[in-house]
Length: 302
Length: 85
Image (cartoon, rainbow over all chains, first blue to last red; front, side, top):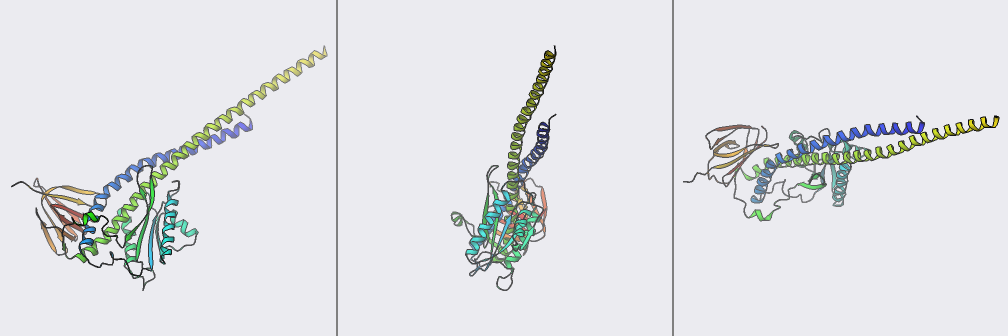
């Protein structure tokens, strides 16, 4: 076997091995999307009920709760960015981080300091490489978040929110979250939302129909314990959606990697075949030439 | 009198735990035990650690232990948002 042919064969073997890996990752992600979607669906009754309750309290009671009233003079905002722990998911992490950067610019434009809270190794590395300050980071659960993780994240966000921004350095007045919304299997969009202070009553239509709730023990106290739960639920929902998006993005990236490997194998096969044929042709012409030379040599001697 | 019941949903952050028709729901709020029957006034209460028991229409009693949560009653719909289990 000629040198050229051997090189082609070797490259084909390596591409085939890579293709097996990407194919496997594609299948794994495909099966995990379904699971992730089911978890999003399973968590929605809780989130819906909670949102209803929060809207009811916040719109009914005119209590000036710190969690619902915008700070008159905000000094610092927290931004929670949710990215992936691992790569191989196309632009997934990058898109979320870019969206976060835009939000940070916007907040800085309003004269706010920004504390960054990061989820996922990709975002952490991005910030570390650029020597930016990180207020808090969590890694290791981006593809399979549980409520306990969400609670852990939400707890430190709420703690930062409740600390005064005037007296303490880490206190924040606003809370933003950047996650990737899972719209469908093919569309996932990075989204920035303000969590706190609440943007109360999005649907004004419902406001008139809100029942007059009795509160136990009292409206402010209910709000006190309701809002941390609300933040937890929102963070949890964002984590779940991001996880589903991550799997979808990874599946798509791995699918195109597999397709590219297929194409590469095809063109390498063509090249290898051409090389093999060229080798054979050359051998034949060498034999024919050799025989010719022998024939004419012996003809000349007679 | 037409039979009327409470539509009860018990949900945790991770999943819907139980849902169905019931005649009575009792739970422990910050201010003490509370029982909810049909046509209860709209209520939003904070639950403390303890048991929530639901008397279903078929007479069976379902007990759940919650570690904090909420109870909301409105228009014969009862939602219990439990923090765990």
